[in-house]
Length: 169
Image 1 (cartoon, helix red, strand yellow):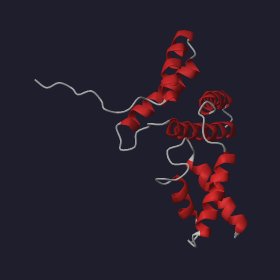
Image 2: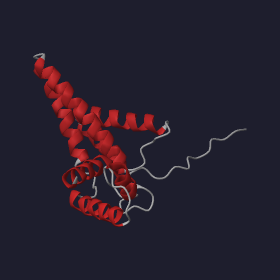
Image 3: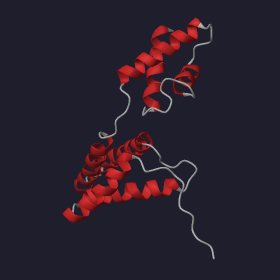
Image 4: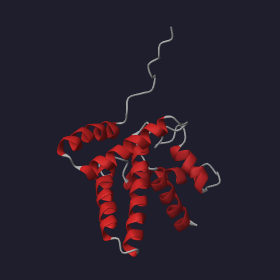
């Protein structure tokens, strides 16, 4: 007889646990908009769990929230252009729910990212290494980097590196 093995994955990210508990609250309150948004988020995270890149951190969940929020904003603009105010309002309500959760994810601040990026650029210049976006990102986010493993959005780091290198070029 074959028994199913328990999953060896780590605990769910705190934000995902909050979404699951808020789903129960939305069910009890009969908040259909929030319920639909939370159900679709949970379905998407479940689907991603079956891929090679499952959501294991709040930062990955934040990326998903922002992606979904951008898609809903785009849809709202298209509905507005088509004269469908009812559908536009529905999409905007979904954006509000998504942004509420996106705001709850704590990430490293831009000030600290800027300090770390500036320090890495100075270190690379002092070592006589070529200073480019890829090298700085590898030094900051790669294994042993000051931001490695911290809750930081890679897009923010990349944008800041490009800004700093553009101003010093």
